[in-house]
Length: 120
Image 1 (tube, rainbow, N blue to C red):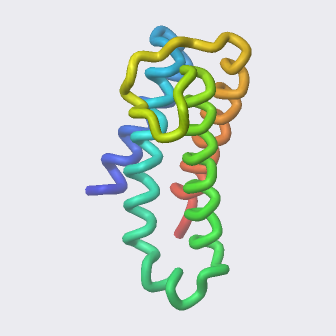
Image 2 (cartoon, helix red, strand yellow; image 1 turned 135 degrees about the vertical axis):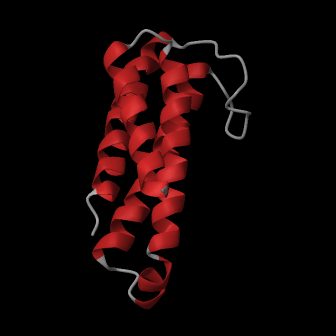
């Protein structure tokens, strides 16, 4: 059930990214939320394995996804002019020269979530 939800959310984010009909900060918030769900799911699924072998493939992929999510949050903060720790739901005041960095972080995050989905 969780896998189906994650796949649905991931597909929704991908469609949003392709359409780009909404502001990039909304796409980023959606992507971060989707990644949160996926990461949480895989952390639960691989918890025992990661406790036993923290350097295993699944654990490394989960930790990379967490790092990618954190980088995307930082890129969103930069794009919206937020200070670290500000509520990500606050009104965004776009910083034009930070848009490319946010887009790159989103693309990376999508790939990292896809990598999670590829775990056995």
